[in-house]
Length: 107
Image 1 (cartoon, one colour):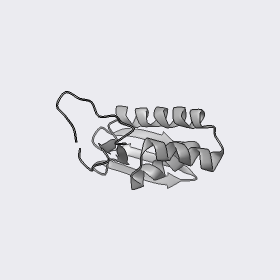
Image 2 (cartoon, rainbow, N blue to C red):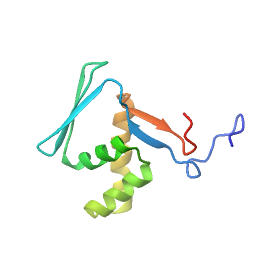
Image 3 (cartoon, rainbow, N blue to C red):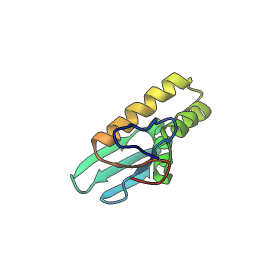
């Protein structure tokens, strides 16, 4: 439950992140993602290390799950994985490519 003027603790209600479905075309080509935001005509290339994060975001995921996935898949330490996920999510947010929902399913 949210109270007016009180910011919810993100650790209690992690946001589910998903790639925007509207106006975003993408393909995996030779192990990399090539995407076009048709609303802004901007092109984005995601290298091999970002492909697993992209795939997670297609399905819908949390920052924590993405971090844990990098640790498990690539053997990164948790701090490095967290920094990589944060940078990737920041880039996608800046390009308005993410849809975010809190754990309750609300906007």
